[in-house]
Amino acid sequence: MKLTVIGTGYLGAVHAACMAEIGHEVLGVDVDAAKITALAAGRTPFFEPGLQELLSRGIDSGRLRFTTSLREAARFGGLHFLCVGTPQRPDGLGADLRHVDAVVDGLAPHLPPALIVGKSTVPVGTAERLTARLRAAGAPEVQLAWNPEFLREGHAVMDTLRPDRLVFGTGSRCAEKVLREVYAPLIRSGVPYVATDPATAELVKMAANSFLATKISFINAMAEVCDAAGADVTVLAHALGYDDRIGRSFLNAGLGFGGGCLPKDIRAFRARAAELGVGSVVAFLSEIDEINHRQRRRTVELTARLAGGSLPGRRIAVLGAAFKPDSDDVRDSPALAVAAQLHRERAVVRVHDPEALENAREAFPQLEYVSRVAKACEGADVVLHLTDWAEYRALAPDTLTPLVRRPCLLDARNSLDADFWIRAGWQYAALGRLGALPHLPSDASAAT
Ligand code: UDX
Image (cartoon, rainbow, N blue to C red):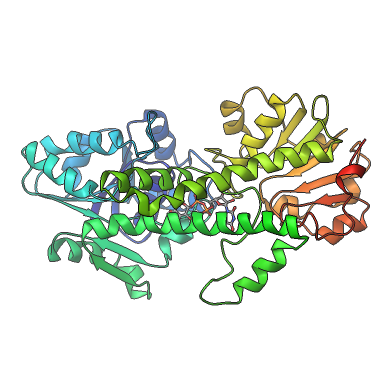
């Protein structure tokens, strides 16, 4: 089929490459000319495992092209995937839909009969509002459907080619049939799909992200209870996870969630629910947000404690800048938020990340960045593990011991091997296990 993918960020670039991979003829569209030039030359504008190969293959096959022209997109065919960003509004909690509106307004005057399929995460009611907008712009033969995307950065290619499920929110059997054709290879391979109306489809995505955020904040709340009670949150999560009704995933306690999706989506959901007159039923999401931010504050406080009670002049090695591993995305990165706060409190901070240094430098130019873990650790009073990269899990503590001023590690992702580090002579601390690891010093015996 011939289709366009409008918006070539994390979502759209992956969707375009994957659609070409399963045999469609794809035109990727973006207003950012530099991004389009890079993509057309086969270069991915961000780090995403597996995307580079897919992009090259799509371009070489002749099935994947790119343009900055919406007019060209409108004439390319009758199917358009909307993949533009829906960030938080600068003046409130709600989603900023200006990019979505701009695409629809830009397409409307040029469109022959067409189906526009939204993939971006939007407040419920957006498809209905955009349909009215299209009608008002004189494009009566254009239909709108919502087909939310659930991909995780770092796993985006596999999540697109082998998703848990597909959700088709359409207003007609005909639109549903088109979506079934688009995804036919996936459906044939056993991927389930749920056909529903656009409003339900929009809500599925908001509800899914709210649930995931809730799960993470739940375990982080338990982590704090564990610290007060001398229990171990990693064992708690392990035991909870055996219950099929709960499940083990998204119960990793630590520094909490960040990125371009979960934080802004739970806020946009609150804002939209309030508009619908049901704000109080999702009021708990503000607590989820608060618990999440609390982990950043706790990490800074614990760092100060481990550094001997005060931060000014203390050298802190920060391992990780991306909001999660296998990504160079630093949007609302918990790791960088902690690094920046430590810097504000006059610690001497050195940040390492395997992929995100360029983006981190742009977001927080005041911090010092280094390209080797060893360099970050030189003279460190405390080493902070803030993003769960495999590279950090493979670190050999013995190689770092001669470099640091004090062998003291705060594992804020609870993913390093505590015994391994402790046996190597390191002081090991982790949120949710502060009272459970007997070898940890008490407040009084922290660094001097
Ligand atoms: C998320 C959703 O998972 C995805 O379905 C949706 O399409 C977009 O938003 P993403 O933002 O890529 O995807 O990241 P995700 O893997 O969900 O992780 C989000 C954050 O939660 C990261 O900062 C991660 O470090 C943190 N996290 C995740 C935890 O702190 N604990 C966990 O147990 C899991």
